[in-house]
Image (tube, rainbow, N blue to C red; front, side, top):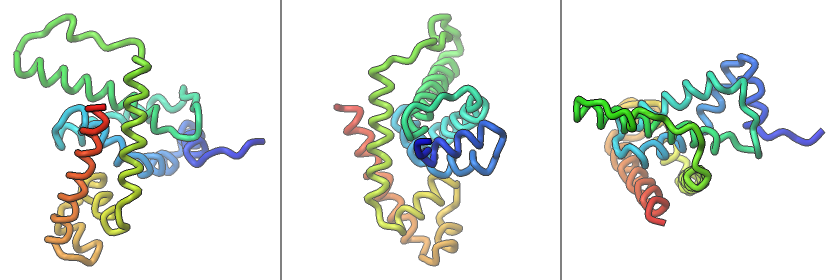
Length: 185
């Protein structure tokens, strides 16, 4: 039997109801999903909401997932893109206080080019995160992915509030640059 990837293993266990396996998938991919969402919606608060919505949908749909390849990230990226599009439509409706029937439709099919771009963006973000120092990765994980405040992250990591604030700012700037490069390509 061929070796199964970690994502394949977690997905299979999570599809069977194993919440700890799903938490492992979440921890492994939440940062990339957040930055994909941020790249689409352009707001940290909306990106956090879209990220959570993405994983809620993923949990419900895991039982029907037929994972192609070793990584679940392209599938999560596709869900994220749809959730972000829904969020942006909702934002436009809220601003205009009108409902446009054409705006209400959710695409039934995935545009392959957009899916490839989304997967490419996810890969670039993960690669960029992989180039960060261990401390920067921990700061990003705690603050951006797990919602810690600067002071709480600083206490957890044994560094100052200023170190967390400054390093997180640099990481976010780098990731925004990565998102922008992929969008402009």
